[in-house]
Image 1 (cartoon, chains in turn cyan, blue):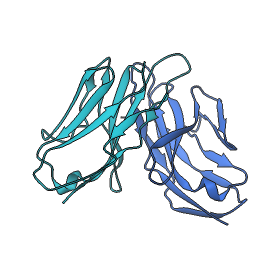
Image 2 (cartoon, chains in turn green, purple):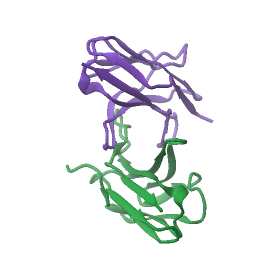
Image 3 (cartoon, chains in turn blue, green):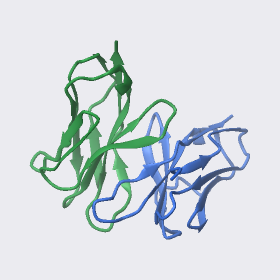
Image 4 (cartoon, helix red, strand yellow):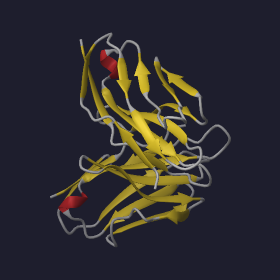
Length: 115
Length: 113
């Protein structure tokens, strides 16, 4: 399997613009997570899905952030409008919950810079 | 709520030195515990895990033992290599129906030749 695939790897955008980050989870995994990594806050869970349904979005910082999972093989994280403080590395991860296999597999991340 | 506390870095060692990165946690019940490693410009990779008390996870010469009595999961390696230079994250998954991971702040390790 190719692992979790995220795109783009790098995104530079101007303040106020809409940004969409994309994620393809590992085939067969039924959980998908979006994390944000910054120097100040470390790794923060933004939202996670189970079988395409959002389970916990309490980590989404504000209404400017939204996430969707229209099918089992694709998810998006959208920021509209973007602000400089949104600059971070955004990771997508997926997992399948079975006995003895509870770890999450991470993509390579999208480095977002808002100027 | 659940939390993970790691020793702060950065940690700089010479090649072949011994490594210990401390990790303690706060959680109810019996969480699963993990160490992830992040190499520069990469995503997080699972290094090792333990799912119950007294379990020892090991991989690539790294070890960590799940200590319920001290709520700890310290990462150890007897002889580090330059290629071990990375950021190491301790994480937990709460017991029960929770599926998300809670991470520590990460510890930057640099190994000098």
